[in-house]
Structure formats: C-alpha cells, structure tokens
Length: 415
Ligand SMILES: CC(=O)SCCNC(=O)CCNC(=O)[C@H](O)C(C)(C)COP(=O)(O)OP(=O)(O)OC[C@H]1O[C@@H](n2cnc3c(N)ncnc32)[C@H](O)[C@@H]1OP(=O)(O)O
Image (cartoon, rainbow, N blue to C red; front, side, top):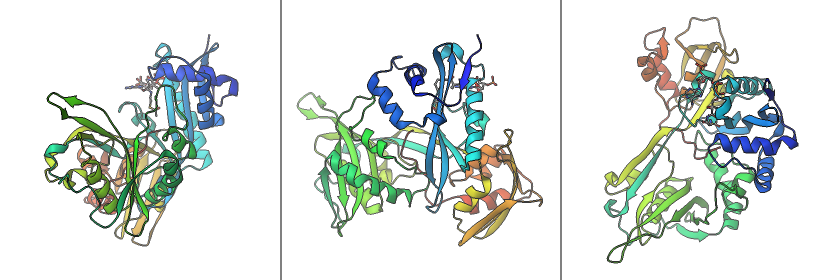
C-alpha cells in the first residue's frame, strides 16, 4: 500500500503522530493524554505534516513562526522546523525530502526570510540548503582550580543577586529575554509556552521536572539585568568532602556586569566543586573570567542553529555592517527558492540588496550564505575549503570585513 503524506493534520491524527515522534526519537512509543494536549497547544496543525501507512503514522515534521535576531538587533521572520522523524521501518525512501520540500515552499510563499532548525546529526540538512550558522561550547569548570576568591560572591559593582521563584521568573524573564534578543544576534523569541515548560508549569513526560535554583541579578539602579537557573546534585566523597556539581540550565545577562556577577556567584556556592556550563556561545566570558582559564575544560563544541535562506535581499538588508563596501554574490539553489545574483551595498547607516546583472565576485551554494549571514564563519576559510569560489581576487576577504562580527552569534534555545 502506498503511504499517504498529509501536509496538515487533523486533531484526530495527533495521538498517532505523537507516538511516531517518540518512536523516531527513541523514546517509548507512547502518547499520553497529557502529552498530546501539550503538543496540541505547542503546534500549528496547519503546518504539521505526517506520513501515514494505513492507520500508522510513520513520519513527522512540523514548523512554526519564529523571530530570529540579525546582526545589529533587528529581527526577521523565520520558519522554524522541528520534530522531524521518519520511522526506522520507512527511512531512506525520500519521506524527509518530500516533507521538507513542502514546508520550504510554503515558507517562501508566506514571506519568511529564512528557515531555521537544530540538526540532530550534521549530515542531514546541508542537501536542503541549510548551513550551520551558530556554534555552542559547553565547559566543565573545576571550581577549586578556577582561582576565584570564594569569599566574595556578591557583585563588585554595587548590584545584587537574589534567589527568585518560578512565578517571578515567569513575570520578569520574558522582558529580560526580549532585551537579550535586541542585543545578541542568533537569539530566537520565546513564546509563553516556553516559559511555562521551562519553569515546570507544563511538562513533557519524557522530561521529568526538577525545580532549579533561580537567581536574579539587579544592577545598582535596580534593573533586572540577569537570570541564572541551575540545578545541583548531592554528592560527597570520603572523609566528608563535598563534591557537588552545579549544572546551568540557563544564564542570561544583558550587560557584561550581569554575566560576570552570575558566573562569579555560581562559582562561589559552598560545596560546589564542579560547574557544567550548559550550551554557551564559543566566546562566552566564562573561561577568561577565571583566574586560571584552564580550569574550564571544553566538553562539547558543536554546530547549533542551522539557517536556510529564503529571501536573500531581506536577510542582507536587515542586518548591519561595520563598513562601506559592495559585493556581487552568485547563489546556487537547486530547490529554486532563493538562488540568483545579488548586489549588496553596505554602509554603517544601512544596506541595499537586489538582483543584478553585474559580474559575480563570489559564487556559492545557498547554504553557505546561511553559514555566513550571522557573521560567525569566514568566507576566506570557506574559499580555502572549496565551498566558495572567488571570482574576483580579494572578494572573500572583503566579505569577511563586511559580514563578520566582533562577538559571535549565539542561540541559547533548543526547539
Ligand atoms: C530539526 C530536527 O527535528 S532534527 C531530528 C532529525 N531526526 C532524527 O535524527 C531522528 C532519527 N532519524 C530519522 O528520523 C530519519 O533517518 C531522518 C529524518 C533523519 C531522515 O529521514 P529519511 O526519510 O530517511 O530521509 P530521506 O530518505 O528523505 O533522505 C534524503 C537523503 O538524506 C540522506 N540522509 C538522511 N538522513 C541522514 C543521516 N542521518 N545521515 C546521513 N545522511 C542522511 C539519505 O541517505 C538520502 O540521501 P540520498 O538521496 O543520497 O540517498
């Protein structure tokens, strides 16, 4: 029997769909009533796809509206893709390809500037025009070696740190995140449901909830500039020596003082001898904040947010550039969604970008622009790898002067 691709779901499909999703992610293939209800609140059924073999759902895919911060703080509408699975019984028959094609076309028609996702495995999404655009680093800090004076846990700038409860986090967290979004490229918006799930109000059965410690940083003028959430285990070694590990669930600072204060606070909590930082930007302040940066060992360094350009002029016009310059980009796009030749003119006060008949300076696949847009990767490096062709000598170095950013992009969230 031929399988049937449904490009939007009915409410009655959801239990089957949830079971297939869990099976695809190697979780128990169940779908409790609570989970189905939570998923229904989270998803847009008109943008949720499923492949059905008879009554059984064998592939899942959904997308939703997202805002993504560009370099400079403005944002673009993004098509966020998530919950992609094809059951092991039906893999490698092109089902992902069919669902992706449908979703990207719909996103293009809707006017989204870019599609986003977090790739479970690196080799899956490049063929669809995605490129890795942000990276994350996780460190494990040996607190005893870190060289911070544990007697001083209070902020040195006259600000203060206080514990908070989940209600306060739901009240104060969203505004703080909006401030982060306006200053950090690569950040995505957080819907209300994000705050409910991440403060224990709503829960997925596969993610049992443990109440974390919440800490707010207030600046000397009483502005809430930072939020830390962490858990701690209860581990003691022989001879009554505490050896507890604190694990950061999130640390947001919208000023450097807030970031420094929250790290310093966590690294001075009694009994805590080890801190797992969670996923930070690769240029996070943390290691260099320590007296001995070698006390922070990298445990993960990996690609995180992947981008698939859909509207090249909008993407390139929305971000800012440090200097004046111009480039002609020839972009290949097998899917026929965003390819063409584009003339970009930049300056500190804004940029223009439109299709052009001029001679190309750089030629690349569309996914390479996804990798370059947030400023993290070097066009010179991609040229050395053979992924960009320099049609005019020096054009890759010029692209780096225009596109790269002093601080690296960061996407703190998973979706
Ligand atoms: C954004 C997210 O949700 S990330 C989560 C992704 N999901 C998972 O990792 C769960 C486990 N894996 C799966 O469910 C499936 O294997 C999927 C979704 C990754 C792929 O689905 P399929 O239907 O098998 O993919 P499809 O048949 O369309 O493959 C298209 C091409 O991609 C390749 N491909 C697909 N998955 C992978 C992979 N994990 N590694 C390398 N190549 C891959 C296929 O080999 C195929 O290449 P070919 O045309 O040269 O033969």
